[in-house]
Each structure stands twice: as C-alpha cells, then as structure tokens.
Length: 364
Image (cartoon, rainbow, N blue to C red):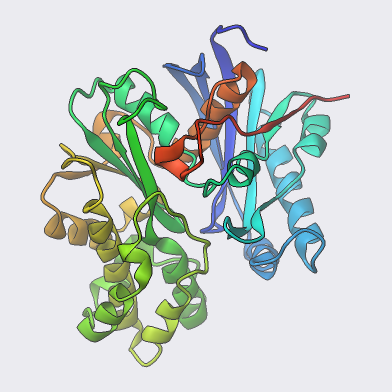
C-alpha cells in the first residue's frame, strides 16, 4: 500500500489502567523512526471510568460492551480528530484477554472511527496473532526494536512498560530486523498499576497512588509478597501474557492490611514480578528503560533499582516520551500493517511464525 515511503502516522492507546486515551504522531516508513510529532492525552472522567470498569471481563455481545465501545469510539474521535496524519492506528480498549481460550477482545470499531475521521484506520491488531497460536501480547516490542536503533544502542537493553500490566522487551539492536532470530524476547512480567489503582479506588476513592505517596508511608508485608510470588505464572517460560485481572488475588492478600501497608506491598509485588521476569533475558541487559505510568512512582522505581543489577532509568533519559511510547507503537505498527510487514513473531508472542496483524478500514 505505502511502497516504503515515510508516513505521518497517528497512534492511539487506551490502556488497562483506564486513565484515558494517549494519542501521538510519528513519522516512519514502518522500519525506522524518522521523527516525532505532537501528542495529546485525553483523560477519562470518573463516570467514564465506571462505564469501562463495568465492561471488564466481558466479551462481544455481553452486557455493558456496547456502552464501552460507544464511549471508546467517541473519546478517540474527539482526541484524534484535530491531529493531522495520513494513517491512524487504533488499539481500542481491552476488556478480556484469554489467548488460549476465547481469544482477545478490544472494544471499539475501527471502521466506525474511519468514517468519523475521514481517514484510514488500522485496528484489531491482536486477533490474527491469537488465531495463529500467539498470545496476542505484548505488541510494542517491534517498536521497541526501532527505538533501540533510534537512540543508537549497541548492546542489548530492555524496555519495561509499567502500565496496568507490566511487560518487558529484551532487545539486541545489532540484529538485522525485529523478527530475526535472537533480536527480541518479550512477555508480560505480571500485574503493575492496575491492581494498585483498584486498591486506591476501593480504599480512598482515588484513581491511582499519585507519586507513590501512600506506598511511601507504608511497609512491605513479606508474607503477602511471598504468597504472591508462589503463583506458577512466574515460572512459566515466555512468551506469555496476562489479562488485566488475572492477579485479582493481590487484593485478597492485602485485605487485612492498613491502606499504606497494602499500597507498599502491592507496589513491591509489581516490582518483584519484574525481577522474576529478568531471569528469562537471553543475556543481562546493559540498562532497563522504563515507560508507562509506573515510572512516575518513585517507590516502584526505587524498588526496581534496589533489586536489579543494571541501571534503571525512565525512557526520557534517552530522549523518548514514556507517556506516549505505546501510542507511538500503534502508529508504527499501523504503517507496518499497511506495508505488509510482520508485527509479531515467535519470540514476542509465541505465534508460530512472524505475522502481520491488523485490519485496514477506509472511510466510505
């Protein structure tokens, strides 16, 4: 479709933390990053978050799903409309993820969004991967490979996204392409911000622990942490992925704790999950670059720095935008889909062979 030219692409991400819609423009040929454009964040209101929460765990046709889809489409049309781009990558809102069962479900119709915006939209990025035996997640690793080359990395490094769920991408930037053998290893490390956000909403009526302020005043309860780490997921070989609520037991483990201790313990659980995951890296990364909302939590970051043997820095340390990296990733993946290039491979999702996901909808 695009014949290798540089495209101004717009990506949007509405993550499992349910905080809002990230939208970002990049210039890319689907292989290299050529430049970055404007970005916008559109927060979800408390009322909108309630609609989204009511749809969690639901599949197409079930109660509440139509309301989530309508909300997601309207919010995306609002935030994407003013941004100039030739192509749009639309992730939608993940409500359920069960790759070895019913599949994966992202609410939101890309065809409807293409009509509303009058521009082509690439969407439904995960389903083809799942149909071919993959986990359908994480999908940002191919973009992480491009980021590693953009920053001029020469030694293996890792990107850690601390969103609702944590995921890590180990990158060898010397590889010829992201789908090449040995170029990438990616998987979900475990729960990250989502259960902490749920705790804050239940205990304090707040959407998240801003700046780790509640956790900073508490102590980690080792017994609860040890029980958490007994989950078999941490021994499972990657690639592997999680649904947002796969570790709902975390809230049960801290139910009897005071608010600050509960927040500190759940933050430690998220950090410990990353530490467990690092053992699977093919070689020790030179550094760990952190993206997503978790990097704004100094308690989380300090726990990671204390528990890992490599430097741990926010991606801003290398000139990237940690709030918009996932949105940029779907802009990048949209161009790859349009060019017929793969968007996942065995070492990122466990799919049988490198595959390009995504459906392209054009207005009219």
